[in-house]
Length: 95
Image (tube, rainbow, N blue to C red; front, side, top):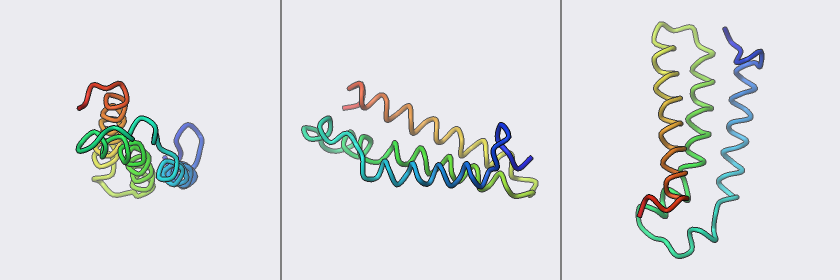
């Protein structure tokens, strides 16, 4: 069970951490230049947060602890929430 669609979870975590690094340096500056406050924070950091949470879910998934499925789901749904919040801010729904 240490794979996701046949891909080892350690490799999934590595790719997710690499995507985190990309999104720390590549972010929608042009959309953020005129914003401030909460919207700025969301547009600046939530896409990277999405990838960090997915990486953590993959790393937790490599353990064989009884709490592992619950924590993986919490991290994965947290990642989904962060991404949907990011998309809402990009669409201008978050002010």
